Length: 92
Image (cartoon, rainbow, N blue to C red; front, side, top):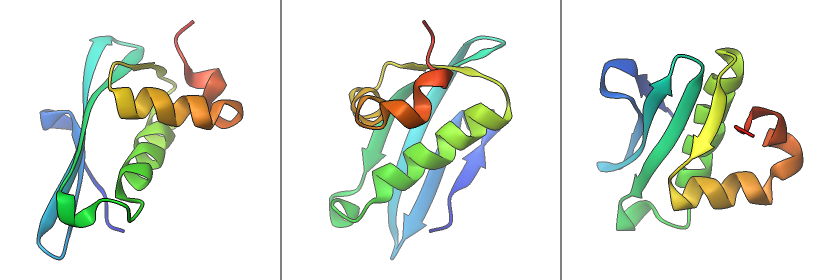
């Protein structure tokens, strides 16, 4: 899956078969990224698209040495389900 990072728009996006998905974020501090919203078109749901966006965005946070907040309900649940993998990134 081809996921693009649009830093100017503060989002990660992908398009598959003409349908779009996005994971938006904010930067409330220089060292913090807050994932605020996930949208996956109905036609892409249940295909792992949101998970791919989440993993790409969290890899970006790790590469950039950012702490992670999860205002987005999907992202909060995702990092909770994969706590062992991402606990070191979370804002305490």
